[in-house]
Image (cartoon, rainbow over all chains, first blue to last red; front, side, top):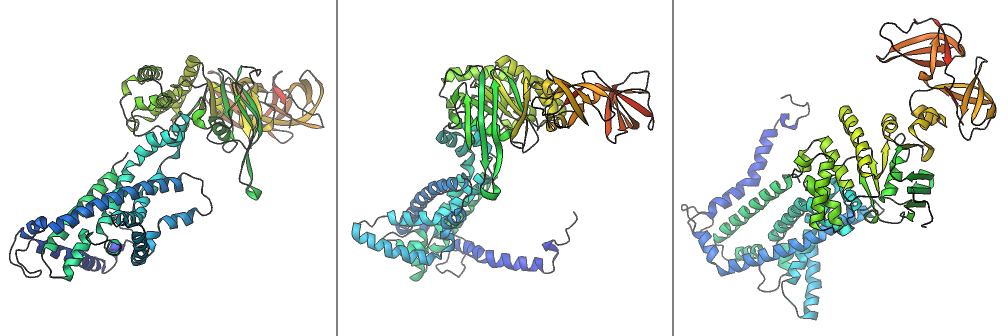
Length: 267
Length: 364
């Protein structure tokens, strides 16, 4: 195959830089995964293969508790964010362009731009006030906060799909006596499904992974897996952390793989 | 409203569609009025950008007129959304639902109307038979050919038995042979269903062969409405004469007009009889048109004279281009015979004899 004159792969040093980058990215992760199978009590000293830390983490009620909370939180936040994102995507694509539309895009995507720590502090202040007023200190705050920062991640794939979708299909549905709701229900939604699933999974992973906002917003006894792990590192460090992180990694890889296949499938 | 004559399926009254405003203001339709009769195969013909698709979209309800009214069987439908109009569309891109089978596509309209399942199934079967697609009912629309997709689009639009079927250049994506087949198929479907068809095309031949009546459009206006024969043989305006078929334009003067016929004096000074377009105002020079097949090249005599410039052989006929002594080129089309050539060589002197009913005077 003929190379194009400006093929970046032909530039001197390309292979070397790529290699360094891959090492920097994946060597620590590889080490973490390897050490999660370590039999030793220490985080850094190798004593042979074992699954003991997986078993130990699995039996740790604090880990179980945090894991279940993390998953529940991610499911709720991702679901709510996906619904909101779908509506936002419909509202911003199924309309003639108007002044202020770009501003709305930016507004919807602002959680991507605003530093997380700013949002976290702001939520801490607002929510602590509300907690005092209402006396409610349940998971609702975390769900709300996670939903908010998950919206842009769900919004982007859904909007992309809507923009590439043939508007004539919805017009054809309307021509064949479908009211706007029925046209959405029978034509737009089925064609949008892969993007909605992709958006949901992205939001799910983002919620599962969050530390900063969760740390600020959570009430006592509301540790998620990431904040639990952070808390553990502050005290003595148990190799359980490695095992949990490895499971986390496996889950993410699984989700990304599913995401890839769902997105690739033609409607 | 019921006192309106029922024979009009669609009546468009002084409809305008304005896009943009200020300097970017553009009238896609400029006070268009037209009446489309029941059971008619009616064609909107014109070049791209003439407003024909805009008019179709207004009738379908995808867009609303800036002013004017659209009546369907006497009822003003202009303010209704598309799903409340008993009018269906065959889209240029077919717009078949990719996540449904052929049968589900065809049944979609009836399902949206809330018809009982048994009725839908019976109707879908009937439609599949009508478009000869029984074997492919369970296929996905991505698994069938372009011509088959076209048939499914037709069946889907016909299934709810609309009062009017709108067709937006439905044949433009098909190859030549399939297009010819579908032209015949469309005529058959229109005949069998008795539904009024409004067909949009830029293809003049398609319009002439299929339509009961044609409206020729240009720049947001309807220039002429008539049967294919009217449009071809008695074009009213230069645009119509030029857009449809080949035409020789001559300048001359006209007098003695009576009952739509007058005497046209050609550049050579010879007078010939000519039909006069409606709305013609005699004010000196007039444009006289003659179709190439309504004139003959002759060795001597004739109404005009010139020199043969080119001869083009087309199999069924030969086109002889004669440079007239007045300067213009006049094209003559002559039927070929197997044993004889057209009898002229390039550079020969030739006379042009115009058939007794061959000349039409335009109004512009």
